[in-house]
Image 1 (spheres, rainbow, N blue to C red):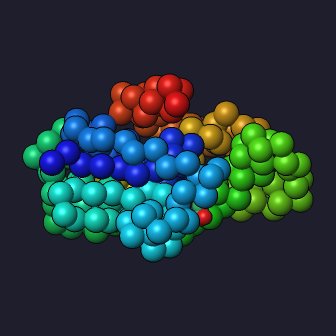
Image 2: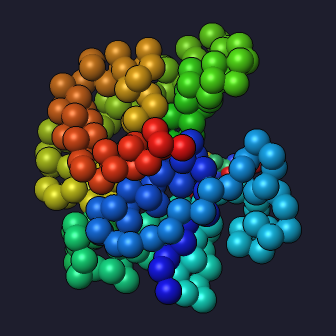
Image 3: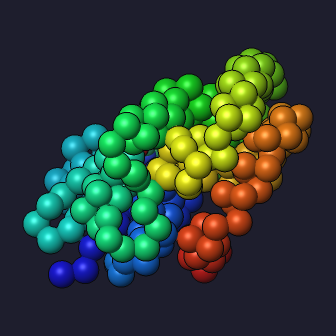
Length: 213
Ligand SMILES: N[C@@H](CCC(=O)N[C@@H](CS)C(=O)NCC(=O)O)C(=O)O
């Protein structure tokens, strides 16, 4: 049975899973969830994710939610397919550190900036300049730490592209098309890393899918 991803192509969390599946070259079915109609809060979707958030994922009778748990499942269970995305032994511990950094240091700030600068304008709502200013300052501090890390290592987790890098791609896609790009441009190592990971064909496939919806 083919794997299923339930979500919206506008969802950064759903994109994370779609990019991982494309890195692995795995076949899957994308099941669109009409979030504007509140489909993610209805009983049939809550059976897949009781928190009523996209994405939800099915592989046979296994049902998962939480995008980063899903990408880890894909990377480990399909380790012999496509891009490795994880590694063995001690280096994986450092990849784990940077996956946590993405989830707890980068993503909360990146999400607030995306909401203010990308999604609010898309929905005809006014951007709150004070929220943008506060979160730009927070992001600049996170990027200083990324700049130091990327001076020691080609990618965040190790010298290969892994989930630690991949997990950033959805937010980067939005932020690099916003005024926040200037913060990335100010950090040469970070800019080179962003250019490198945003050139991945797996991301291009997901963006093409988003443009078709
Ligand atoms: N930690 C979750 C976050 C999922 C999430 O926030 N999804 C958003 C779309 S990107 C959503 O469904 N929002 C609707 C809601 O929270 O009601 C994950 O990574 O899967």
